[in-house]
Length: 100
Image 1 (spheres, rainbow, N blue to C red):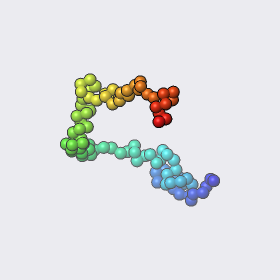
Image 2: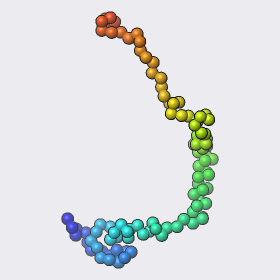
Image 3: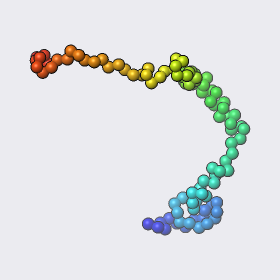
Image 4: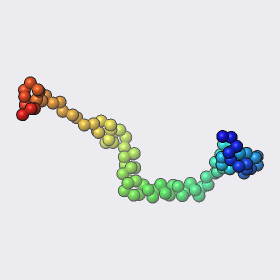
């Protein structure tokens, strides 16, 4: 169903369009992402938040696990395997043990 939206101007390129949303194309809609720069103040705030997290008990546990190398005490995939014992003496129908 073409032209179901009202006609409007794109805020970036000022072209008239009848598409959904304020922008006429993906290129115009993504322009705010290209112009964004991260300031030193923002970087410091992120770093401070990460440092605060690693001071909590959960952060300390995560840091400890991430700092270990395989074979140096870190849990490996083999540590999570469960040995299932073989069942040798199981009753059979011929024995009649399971029907009693």
